[in-house]
Length: 610
Ligand code: HGA
Image (tube, rainbow, N blue to C red):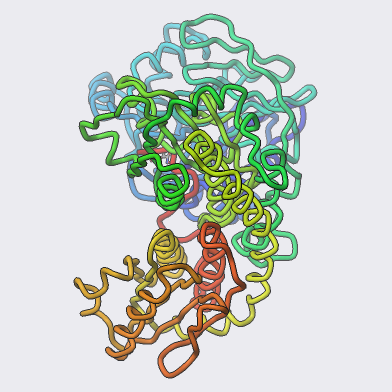
């Protein structure tokens, strides 16, 4: 959340910063701003409420020339979205700063600084940091030293980039709890919250470690670690295609990412499966040894990743016979928890920077567990670096705030993991072959579902004038229903709730009438007959049903039931395939309602604040 970008170059950096912000806009989009140091040695700042396009318009009218600069796109945590709260924040006329994160002791510092004569023009926690650095600059007369001294007084999470007009050749940046990468150029260097922001100017990156502080100059990068020792960080090349931040032929990133699923699910399997087996070593050289003794799995995640974890619990208990618990990270981290002996602590996060998930992992380390496994989409992220085993999902950058390909690749990775674990727990060879073959068919089956797009678009018309909806599923399809409801509510703003279908008569049935569409996923598994009875319960109350059903499950379109037929899928892999029609449904409803599909209100991608 919040995106920061910065550049130290010999050329004008306004365009680089603006393009970086456009590419980071998925992280926050309530206001945007930029500060550059011009040829006369003065800082020029521009800030606008709303999206990056508003800032670009303002800059077109009044450009901000300069060869060094910082920029920010905001998702407010402290103070409403307004021009005065937008970043960069300044202390006086000579120091500018951009920040991603939250300073927890900002009120205390603000009171102190105010008593010392500093004046505040915003409600943000960030402005406190600007004044604090300025205060140390007065004695240190060196930006690096001033930033080092100031961060010694901060509690909370931050990635910062700081510019001082008296030191026109350097940016000072640091990181503690929020992501920050350095883009390495030739005769110029860059910083950003995410590599994507810098792809037009470089494909070589260094990932800063927690506690690092870096001095970025045109031709030199020096880093000190949290102990003040000089540190070397590896320079790696960006792995994914350069088109990641481009919508291509699609109207929205979400639609593009939905259609990428057959390809990326295949990539997630690559190198990890033969035609009949899972390759355990592909999960890490230590995987066999670590999985051997696992007696319990604790899954921790948030949002969509939490739903992936819920599906995985069904798989892990069914195929590996290992007890598995799943919990939302923000709950787990704030309660007294008991971690059983030989627990595998499994964290799922698209970005690998989800603040609550990371905090839960760090806390659990104190209580002890056998090993930590990360299922993640971003190489080099904090979660990846802090875990013993890693399964990268290889979904490629996901820009749409609504998660699509990240979820289905998480499921793919989790099923591969389950098979590896199950092998140590009595999974028969025959069953392994059956499931691996089923998994190999998933990309093709997802492609078949994508071909239903026009029909699903037609179905979506029934939702446009509705205010509420219900999603039902049974067994491992219950989390799929939860995910479907989350998608619909977050991008169309229609209230959507999901229930295990068997719970219907314990309350939610009271809500059912002709104004409440009920969406159900019905693969042909051993629960389908029970599900059909639940559908009759809805129909008998005048509810309108929208059922995505296996074409062999014998659910027919009739009065009050609209059935969309899905190709036959193995019951184990069904959650992956049945997610896709629900993604398309929510997408088309949102388009018809005219909402901002890729950047829905009040949300942001990659939740790096608590
Ligand atoms: N606390 C700062 C930055 C917010 C942020 O990083 N959001 O993800 C602010 O409110 O401006």
